[in-house]
Length: 78
Ligand SMILES: [Zn+2]
Image (tube, rainbow, N blue to C red; front, side):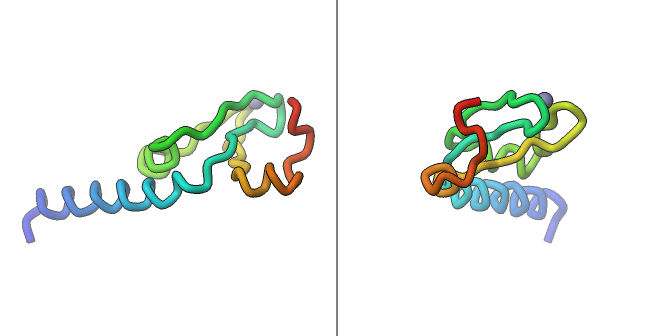
């Protein structure tokens, strides 16, 4: 297998992971300052491949839609 084959395979893997992560939806939030934004399709895959967003020196927390619907996300109005 050539190096370009490997690179292509890994890129495809990220797409596959991202596609399966999209179903969780939800919201990304900094637990320190409350900054956050909704998770849109493709974002989870991009973060997985290139690095998770950070804020206030921490990795931002991902609250899935299921957790939000279940009321597990504290201060959901923030
Ligand atoms: Zn922050």
